Length: 239
Image (tube, rainbow, N blue to C red):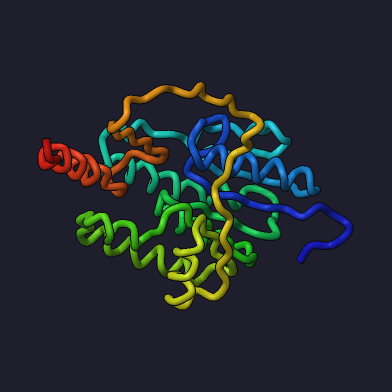
């Protein structure tokens, strides 16, 4: 429990963090900045090196060595995440005693150090589900195999073990509640519009369809279905 004699402390386990320019790094960069402004001490365990260093807002980053496996495709990325998950446990135990442990997914193996560290420190776990796993894999028709089934059990077990599960959509929050997850809250993705330049308006010929997709490009998104559907519509369009 926190007391007035010291600042509250958070331990974050992530597969990506600043200075990387990934969606989870940007999201957690904003959250950590807000926590630091509110008086929290923050320790972050993420891939990126060996020696601890201070983050932009005074948080302490405890990196794990990054292995060049991500270029080997899905299996390589998964192996890289597994190595990080294993190394994150001793890294997380080498820091100060936290008041809460946070693990952020979609790197599924990160659930393991989140659960282990929360139990070793005897502190509540907050699990952030940035993607709707394992439902997303089922809907995209991704073949899981034995390893995928095992990871699905790990993720759903972590969801039930967490004191709080955070999602980015209300729909998945309702799905988790129906699955028996105790406490679920939604913290949607957002952007500070004041920091973005407005794109100039472009004239388009009448009758042409222009589609803009903003999001991840990966196997689970299944965007090839939209491309195939658009091609079919073009071929079957009258005239």
